[in-house]
Image (cartoon, rainbow, N blue to C red):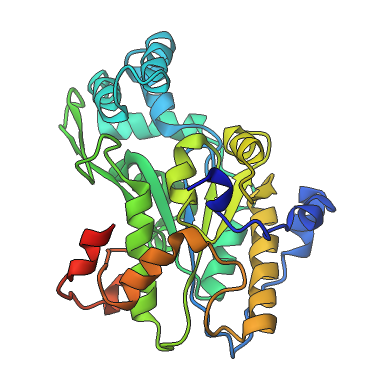
Length: 324
């Protein structure tokens, strides 16, 4: 499929998003917004972590301070970009270079990381509107969870599901070993996780004639596999994901902070309710993901994703998967 067909080309909120500065947008969004009571459409948000929710990369902070150092890290990163070695193989080298106990490592990150200034307001918006918010990352889940706990507090952090790799870290901190979520060369196949989540949201909906709308928020080209599965893509302005979208004609909404994302999601909610009443296909629809909608309608996929997994019953997988 051509890149330009990956996301719906009719998507264009960029003009309205650029019309206000982030500070003006932030002030306008302080009043809580709740979707109309009649809204039936299930909206599910997925966001990258490093470079998106937090402006720095958690792994880079650790590797530079307690591992191989910035020069060697850049050399290893180059092996991924040139295709010399897989992401999983390079990542194992990076994580194994660490020699720091877990808690001191977290202290280093706390001193180095900066959260998007409007993320907490956006997350409260999601909670107020029953929009599941999920972190989807190639990083290590124990690190991401503790960072969110530190910055948001454990109560607020508990509302965010994390789809990432697990980890085996010994007490002295001399062994950091990723436990990969998937068997692929990526370690965590973000596209597969979103495909599964879309199916779960469909199965969980009390309205059989409505199809969920998936939102993805990211910053880098590594987010592209997940972005391809979303109905609406938000790309941080000025970074590589936006550049790739422009180069390949992929529809997206640029954002500077999560205030812009909140404003865009609200406009999409209002538009969808106005034009569809929350029934049938979303107005902003990624036709490239329709095969997974078909699978989910047949009960072929089911994940462990925040906000939907509790009500999904395991079902037998049918022969349709062989057609993919």
